[in-house]
Amino acid sequence: MTRFSDRIRRIRPALAGFAAAVLLTAGCTLPAIAPRTEGQGEAAAPGTAPTWRACPEVPDELVGRGAPGMRYECARIAVPRNWGNGATAGPGAGETFEIALIRIRSNRQHDRIGSLVVNPGGPGASGVDTAVYLSFGSGFGGLPPAVTDRFDIVGFDPRGVARSSPVKCIPDADLDASFGYDPDPESQASFDGFVDLNKRVGQRCGAKYGDQLPLYGTEQAARDMDAVRAAVGDEKLSYLGYSYGTLLGAVYAQLYPQRVRALVLDGAVDPQQKLIAGSESQAKGFERAFDNFDRWCAANAGSCPLAPDARGAVTAAIDKARVSPVRGRDGREATAGWVFYAVISSLYTESGWQELARGIDSLQGGDPTGVFKLADAYAGREEDGHYSNLFDANMAVNCADETEKPTREQIRQLQSQWRQKYPLFGPALAVGMLGCVEWPGGRDPYPTGKAAGAPPIVVVGTTGDPATPYEQTAALASMLSVGRVLTWEGEGHTAYPQTACVTAAVDAYLISLTVPRAGLRCPAR
Image 1 (tube, rainbow, N blue to C red):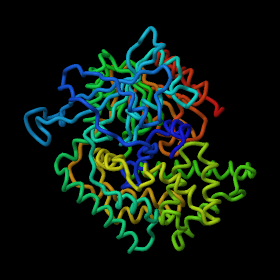
Image 2 (cartoon, rainbow, N blue to C red):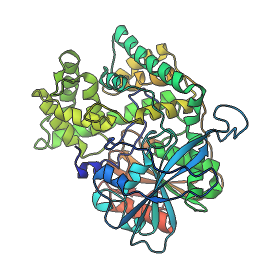
Image 3 (cartoon, helix red, strand yellow):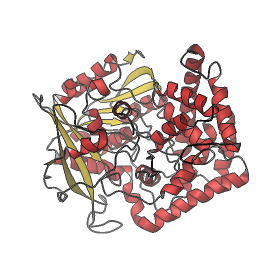
Image 4 (cartoon, rainbow, N blue to C red):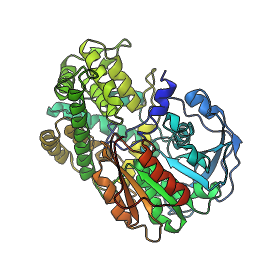
């Protein structure tokens, strides 16, 4: 079982989409450490106030207890499946999805400002779970008391995710096959095998959901967020979105600029990037982050058994796993794919670097336990081999959003080109695009324009971020036209609330609407 401290530590990586729409190579994620059970009670009808009930069982399931001095209440609201068509025509017309909410209130709350709605990204991650983790305070990587003393913390599972009318159509066996697959299927036969796996997944999900699949897109979810705002009784929205959650917040700001109070978008997604550009951007970001790990390893040989050449050791471990994978105690083989995802997982936090070094070192000695621990945390794979619906939702959302659809031949060419430019991560990001190429259903792209009329929005970027590379920070701020960039010169994915500088700037903005000064850069430590 994951230790309590590990669970809390992993809330901050939140979720990016590891490639804008990779099949099952998609979606950076917190570990799925507890079952997502359906909430009790009926959902409030659209436009009506929800009925809140005490739900201490949610933090109990996730971490074994609630945070001291915090009260947990849950509710469910119904939202139109199709906000565009209402009750008149088209897929989902007249039908609803249920959205699960949690509201967390400190017993020390005073001078209440309102609710702070949080989303961890993904897409596919549970905002209910994340709100619980954030409630444990700054000592565990959660929100500072300065924020929890002034706001209710409100988490919601977006449509299709976890407790909110979850989409589930990918069997555990196919997820295992995908994560275990060679991240760089070089031979044509191996490439074709990955095409077939993606095709099988797409056909199964299309057969189950049909023309409903586009309804899981980001614009529909952003409109759900306005229903959440109304349900908690706030005239304007205060929001903290990580990773993909920055895209959700950016779309909300475009749709409802007059209803924005304060938006913090941490780990920016550039909404204007199409599938190929976004995938290459991530290949570059992960390659850069791995270079940083390699340099750290060489400079800290006492903490890194892979020194002096961590890149060489990791590359050799992946190559060896292609021909003679180490078998774990449960019989699972640590194939090249599982080793690759251990690397991916480790780069989301600087603290993961040591775990990777130890894991690869142990793998060389015949023990894959550390590699599986890292990879399973990324994949949300339980000890019994069961997965949550995170990756089902990830595919449904990403592919509904994406309009670009490269051919298999283009992807094959990019695989070769990116192998030269980004040798460890480029091929996987290229072939990962097959997910949406083989995905059925229509598309429902989100808007990519200015948030005209909105107040200043804080966009936080981390210079060493692998999943949402730093270059996307200014791009998102510029697109919105009201964005103010806050930079953290650190490692890993997302920044708040890791250092005193970032925390002070974001807290002042959330509480007092004090916008960080232009060009503010916070040191790594």
